[in-house]
Length: 128
Image (cartoon, rainbow, N blue to C red; front, side, top):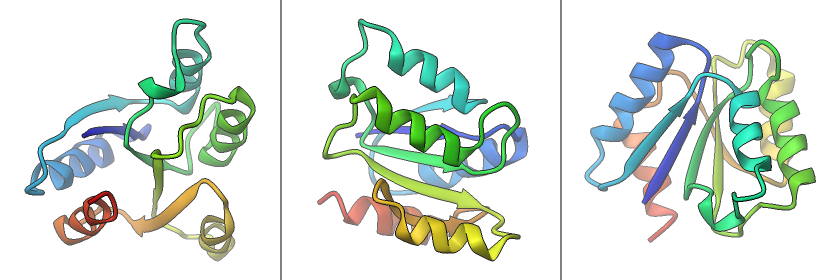
């Protein structure tokens, strides 16, 4: 199991990683500070869709490239894989974001920050 966390906030990254590590599911975790950094990685010719994680935990509000822009750019790369599960992690101060997350075809769910062990376990159960 491979998990990627994309979040620009150090405290949020730590809390998310901690929540994932509390789960009983063993996984490798990669942490990224920006969505643009991940997009550059994905767009590399040597990167294939199979290199994508099983779970991607994505913050929405980030400088340079926000979560929505990242999702749009990911779709354009054509390197998506069917088993990739993207979950939005956000404070959801904007109710419009919650509605967009619910309707987005690449988003499997959304959680308020910080993510709890119970929510992480519910994510992993969808992959069993």
